[in-house]
Length: 83
Image (cartoon, rainbow, N blue to C red; front, side, top):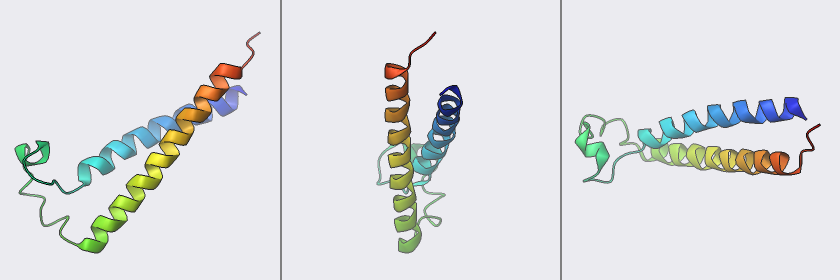
């Protein structure tokens, strides 16, 4: 059970970092933090509709994995019997 907990914790760390990176890669919708930190420079990178849709799909899937790992860790910690 400890090995599963360690694997889930490492997975949570990796998915958290990747999710943060993917969210920051999304095209800004205007007037927010993305414009404040050079949102105009990256407008050519997110101009493709296919690339934006793929980025959205990857972000949603990674978010679901992240949420599932959190729920699994919570259940393991709740029902684990420590000696």
